[in-house]
Image (cartoon, rainbow, N blue to C red; front, top):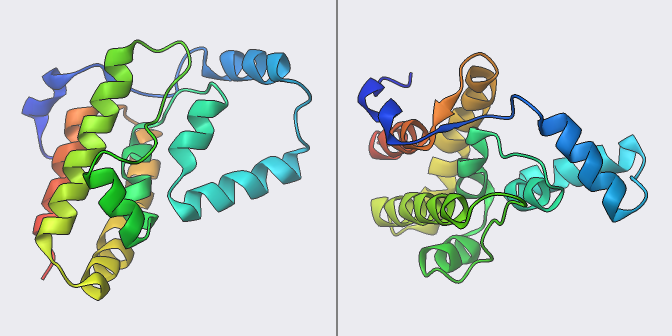
Length: 167
């Protein structure tokens, strides 16, 4: 997995290491009362399964784990994927991040969605690729990035390979 070492030079590492927890607490306090942990867990779970976790995490001022790049790709319905491909979906905007960060994220996500949609035109087949290939990749990336940070290029390459390998 992640056999594209030449891509490590394509950009900075996308990781939640460092001051992310401190920043998250500071932003949450500035926005008002923090919801109870049960509500936070429910909100994050719902967003994860809907493919909108990156938006929730960014809105909370937290840094984006690299695997979030494929969350919408793995879970969104066909209409949402088509909006992303057309550039009509709401972009992920990270507080205190340079505009180039947000633009790189949007371009990477659009490229992956367009690649998925071009891989097969049958909606049932796209759902199968999501369920059988992209969700397992997402879960593997969650585990992997807790040990080693990845670049956006590495996430892109790995995801493209998974889409291209579907039968």
